[in-house]
Structure formats: structure tokens, C-alpha cells
Length: 312
Image (cartoon, rainbow, N blue to C red):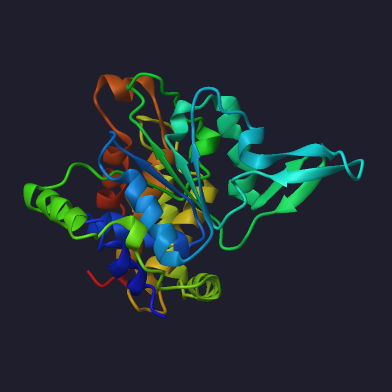
């Protein structure tokens, strides 16, 4: 089973967004989590559901609202009247693919319920730790923070996401293809699974074995270091961010049929992996300097080692 098959199947219903689909599958192979940020109606939830359907995995959807409680996500311990013992009832987070819809509409307290499970793949309730299934992928959607009824995600929560992407509105011809596709029945509900859980586990294992040279690792470190030294950055990319970048580069290389990662893989993933982890200074906002600007500048100024395997 080739991972590119997932891209092809998901693209049947997510039209006109090949890069977003590729990044989503890359995130899956790297065993990371994905944050999709955009205005309502651009296909965020459709992309998340398409991944779950094509993977043939157990998936659950959580609609985040202001009154959602942490126990509504993780589960709770309840008294079994028949046995007289307390039993743990799993929450919707116990699935291979968890769709956290409009995650920033819930309170920070509720959002924090995802911190442990996204970082450790475990849920601890009443002092007892429970394992979630493998593979485990959280695909969260969020509306822009300036929209009514939204909360900003804390830095610790943002750092749990391997990537953050946006979809944007479709081109007119792609929007027409979506309308025609709905009329012809090409919707998520009819998407066929092309991979089972065992195959997905094998692919994630293969991705972790993709070769990364010392030169390429130094290049990733240099990119992260460049973000830390920027005058408009209060907190730059951490060591965890650098590890995430290398892990994602391995997954992208596998997706493209290679057994070694290159500088091209790192460069293609630097913005979606690093940008959302940067904390900028107040002066940056006044001067309209964005996280995207910082990372692209780091890419432009950081030299690529000749032995980093660049295909550019």
C-alpha cells in the first residue's frame, strides 16, 4: 500500500486543495496532529472526515461549544449500580481519528483536556491511565480568533499540533467541481476506505526509519535558531519544534517515495510546522509582521548545506 493512495482518495472529495491534502497525510504518517484554521464553509470538516473515511479507522467527532466540559472529551468514572463498583466510561477521544470541530469555541479549561492525550497518547482519569488506540490523530478546526465566541488557543495547546494549515476559498472552477461532485454523489459519506489500521501502523513505522543526514539535521536546527534570533520574536521555535520538523520531513519523503529526507522536504514543511509555535512581540503586530513572515525570512537567510540532499 502506497501512502499516495490516501492522497488520491481524499482528493476525490476535497477538490482544489492538493497541498492541504498532502500535508494532512504527511501529518498522519508523522504521527502528529493537525490544526486547520479558516472561516466557516471552506471545507475544514470535510477534509477531516475524508481522512477518517479513507483510512477505514474508527473516528469520532467532538463539537466544541462554550458549555463543553473536560469529561465530555476524556470520559468519566461512574458507579455501576449492579456490581457496586466504579467503571470508566470512555469519552469520544478514544478513537483512531478524533475530529475536534471549532476547537477554539470551548473554554481554555476544556481545551486543556486534550493536552495529555495529544502529547502522550494516554488519558488519566481519577489517577488511572488509559491508552488510546494507535494510530491516533487529532484533526482540529478553528475559526479566526477575531470571530465572535472564540478563544485563543494557549501556546501549550498550539505546540501539541504538528502542523497548522489554512484552506482558503476555492477558485471558481474548483467550486463548480464541488457542486457537480455533490450532485454525482462524490461526498464523504460514500468515500471508500483504501487502508486498514495495520497498514497505517506499518506506514508510520516506515516513516520513522527514513534517513536524515547530519547535515540535514543541522539545517533544521539552523532554521529554528534563526527564528529565535529575530527581533520581532519573543519565543522562537523550541527543540520540540525542531524535532517535529525533522519528523515531518521523514514522513513527506516517504509520501514522495524516498527513503531519505532532503532539504526540499524541510523547506516545504517549515511554515506549517514552525509558524504557529512562534510568539511575537507587540511591536511585530504594530508593524504587521506575521509568523509566516518570520519563517519565510529564516528560510531565505539560512544557507542550505551542500550535503543536505537538496533536490532544488
